[in-house]
Amino acid sequence: MREKKRNIALIAISFTALICLLAMARLQSPAAVQTSAAETVPTATASPSPTPTATPYAPEAPELRVRGEDPLILTAAPEPYADPGCEAWDSLDGDLSDRVEVSVEVDPYRAGEGSVSYTVTDSEGLSASAVRRVIVEAAPVPAVEEPAQPVVYLTFDDGPSVNTPRLLDILDQYGVQATWFVTLTHPESTELIAEIANRGHTVAIHSASHDYQRIYASEEAFFTDLLEVQDTIHQLTGTRPTMLRFPGGSSNTVSRFNPGIMTRLAQCLNDMGYVYFDWNVSSSDTVAKNTAAVRDKIIGGISGNSASVVLQHDTIGLSVEAVPAIIEWGLNNGYIFLPLDEHSPTAHHGIAN
Ligand SMILES: [Zn+2]
Image (cartoon, rainbow, N blue to C red; front, side, top):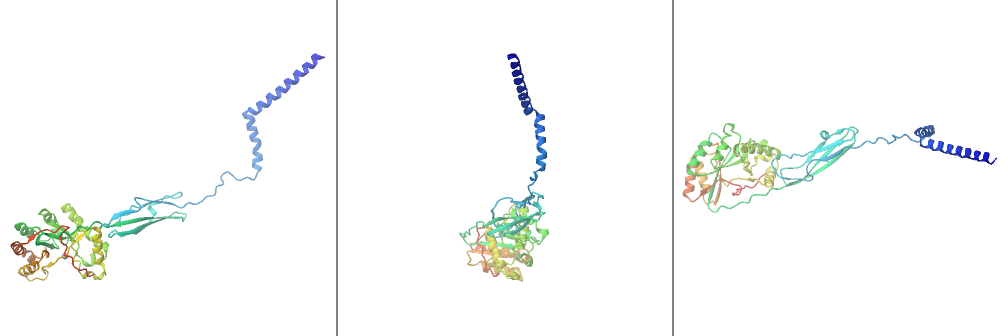
């Protein structure tokens, strides 16, 4: 009887162990996990919870990035303002740099502050904008140095022309150097600019076109013309002059169709560190009847001056023929003849426009 009870107890223990083992196996089996997961799906489907891709679409404005420096610092110069530009990118449209609208409020010709505004709009109508500050600084102005002894600066406008070789030979004959304010109005003679410089004379700027209506129409028109002749001089001589004489002089009234243009141009040139020259001895060679009249007018003007800036025209033959007598008179009366440089007396006139 006791034996039977023991057997029943053993069977009960074994059965309990078997149940425990089966339960453990079910917990560890992947199949059991799958089954368990599968069992939860119907419950989840039945629930009204939101779908996983629920973030709503939000349009994004483009982004702008100004290229180069901001603020951009420049020195006043005759060159037009060149903006480094702006990059634009949009999450939907991609690169929009080509579609940026640029508004330039910069005067590159004089000292001051300006700005450049950029705006871009993407295909959804969303816009972005940016602003660059531009600071234009003045260049240093060369100081005028008073000559130590009485000096004559012979200056010849409007060439080179057919008269230039003759004038160069006259000056060589006396070992005298002078100044040409050159134009490009005689294309067949333009290359003589190199010869003028090679023989030691000063080549300075007058005008490419010498067309008053054109050059005094605006600052931009004036400096476009100036750059044309300056570039030509640079190609022919290797130097880029910053000395000039205004067509008609700074006191001209022919520019009054554009009120105040001469006042503004004089300020621009000053801010660029350029030097303009007028004259204090006129030859009146544009109206003179003969060489003797030119000679007498100039000698009369030089007399008693410590520094004479003489205006003649390369393009007027009878004026060129007066040069030997002028040099001989000057050398015999204690004057020296020099080419202008940027420290020479400027003989400025009063600006009349
Ligand atoms: Zn002229």
